[in-house]
Length: 98
Image (tube, rainbow, N blue to C red; front, side, top):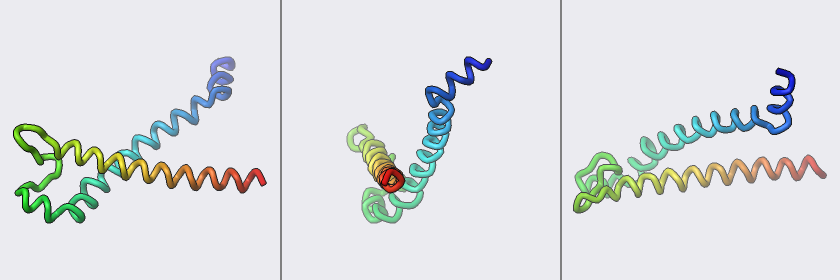
């Protein structure tokens, strides 16, 4: 058991597990923000013109391009949040080194 705990500590497995759990919850939060807040506010006129209440239901000829558009918006918001978080953390790391 001691060897296993040493392995976990040495390779940072516990930190990785925590990061995966927090990342999953962050993904849920960002998806909710995009689907329930950003898309309705920003794209509401376009959705009304297309007679659709959910962006993921947009389609043309059986091709659900709305899902791709919704996923692209999710990705962009998530990438922005990760960028801002990394910038904040790396800045604090640089300050701590000086």
